[in-house]
Every structure is written in structure tokens, then in C-alpha cells.
Length: 183
Image 1 (cartoon, rainbow, N blue to C red):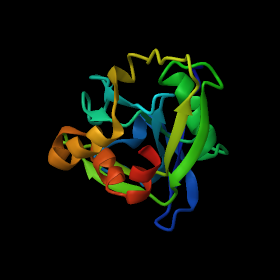
Image 2 (cartoon, rainbow, N blue to C red):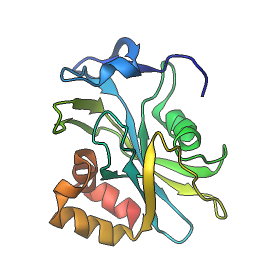
Image 3 (cartoon, rainbow, N blue to C red):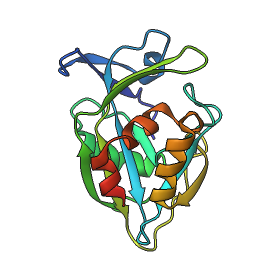
């Protein structure tokens, strides 16, 4: 990454962009609505990459969640942000993530973590495939650890213990379209 300030795109309640703000200042107790994305990455064996958020993350540190998340920058589509963040967060080479498919284009959520920090995002959900022979080498600033899991087992685990996972993961997996895309 460069030394440039990472900007997130703010949104109005109807989902229209209304400006930008530095990412470092957005997630607070009064987080403004903004654009993000969530991605579920499958390998050639059909296993799903789960990541545990780095302990230094401002929101939900140490919680298990989907493969990777992020924010599209100004002028960047969510699909372009998925490709970019696969490199920045998971340490993959450009082009190692393919078949980037938007599964839940209208997903949004608002959640408050135990410290009072709010996530409030318009967050389309993607499923993508990892090119065979590639393996993530995640940034320790983003990911504490990772596991390849059976998607059906994950769905069952989230149904039984939703509190053990990020709130957005639990809400996303409640959608049948995502479940079908993962299985």
C-alpha cells in the first residue's frame, strides 16, 4: 500500500454516494452509512476460507468472519475493490481470485460491537474462486489466522452459535442465495 489516505465512500439512506471520509475516522460510535463489500473465497476443492480478524482491528478484533471485506474507494466498483483487497488483505497475486460473482447486491447491515463501535454499511456480498495452486499469505494487520472449512459445516456452526462469528457473517449466511452459491 502507498502512504495515501484510504477513503471510504459515504452514502445517504437511499444508497447514493454523498462524499468521502478517511477510513481511519469513519468507524466510531456514530459511524456514517458507507459502502463496503464482503467476499467468500472458495478453493478448487470447494472449501471456504474463513479468517479471524487481527487483534488490532478497531471493530470486532479476533472474531471469525468471511474470507475478506473492504471498502470500495472513490470511483471504484465493489468488484474492483474485491480484486484489490484480495491482494492487500490476503497477500494473493493479482489475478489469483477469479469468478468474482455478486450474490447479494442489496445487502446492508448495522451492528454495534462490545466497545460501542458501529459498523453501518451498504455491503454487497460476493463469492469468488481462488486459482488452483494459489494460497493466501494474509497481512497480519488484517488477519490473525485462517482456516479452509466445509461451507455446510460453517452454515451449521453459525446457526448454532451465531455469537461466535461476525454479525455480518451471520446475517449474510441467513440468505438462501448465498448458501446456494457456497454449496
